[in-house]
Length: 80
Image (cartoon, rainbow, N blue to C red; front, side):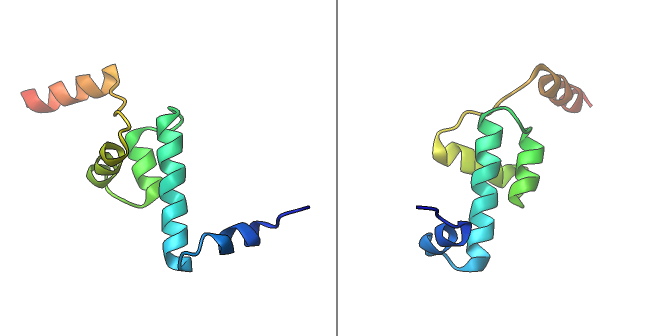
């Protein structure tokens, strides 16, 4: 039996406006978790700020990827 994509979307029982937001957030989290997207790109895909995305990751127990490049940028920022 073939299941149409519309059938899946209808079964989610979310208002259409909320559905798009939720699907983008889920996709962003999964791609970030796999290392396919940076924090900034994932937050942008989800349509939220980096801070909001970090809160979402924490809520889900997903650790933040922290690269050497990010550490260098943070140190440069902190040192002025």
